[in-house]
Length: 184
Length: 175
Image (cartoon, rainbow over all chains, first blue to last red; front, side, top):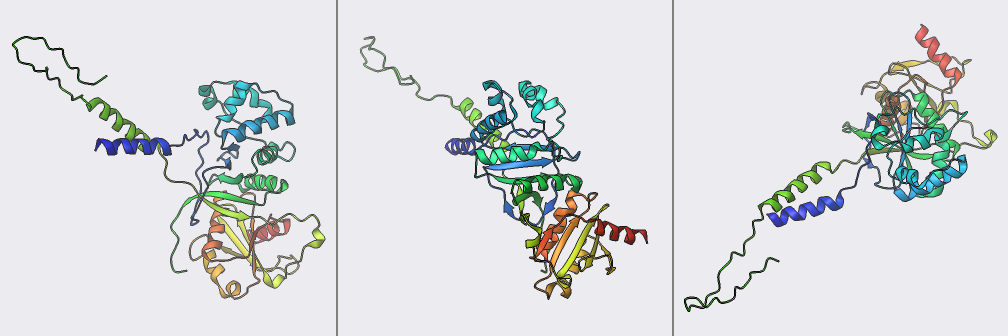
């Protein structure tokens, strides 16, 4: 029994992937779709109930490359510490101008601060830049949109338009499970 | 570390007998720890991966002229309005033609019946255009995409709402 116990401990330790804490609570709508989202190389664009847009991508390497690219693009200098913090970050929803001070915070402060969301307006569309630079950093990424049930379609439309402007025409909508109705 | 140490012969009593020491170690704390870890990892593992729905958007054409116009007889438009309402009409929605706008809902007897009706099922070229209004919820969009999947409607597109359609809905709700 003890042997078995240790076997299970080893198994769970090896399979355990550290799930980064999610800052936004998104209540996804349900659908009958049974496709599963892949484990890695996923960009998740979360849209919460207040129409704020959050961005996250997995893979520390990808994020390291991404922050470098964004830094050059926007002329912001991140030090090693901040880059490291960024590479371990889960969802974030701050404009690039505020990103540096956001990364300087302690992780406790970061959970408490009110994140305004990533700008998706046509005037300052940073989401498109994030997506583009991520795809340059890791060409294998697929894009998933995780929208809240009560989000206005207006915001979703803006996100989709942004993606289409960057020539992304295939993406996934994250949904919950729902039983398929019979008789069809 | 844990090997049994053979004690040197003390020479006492003439009998040559090594002193027996217990080879058993109390493993209870270790096993306790192991099971604690086991419980911890079991509880923190998330099994359920999120479901996704893959959608492909039409590629934005560089040139509008290149697009082939859809025939009015092969078109159906579903408008997702505020407060979980659905309106649909057949044809392209030219205001001069005054298309009949019908209200429906997301229940099994609502839009699903319409999508399964012979008008759509018997026409291979029938294209369903889904036009969500700004006020509609994201859930509505997912629901309608779901309905399209349930009813096995292959040809559909997510299209931006036009002023014409807004007008049609307004006249319908204004009645």
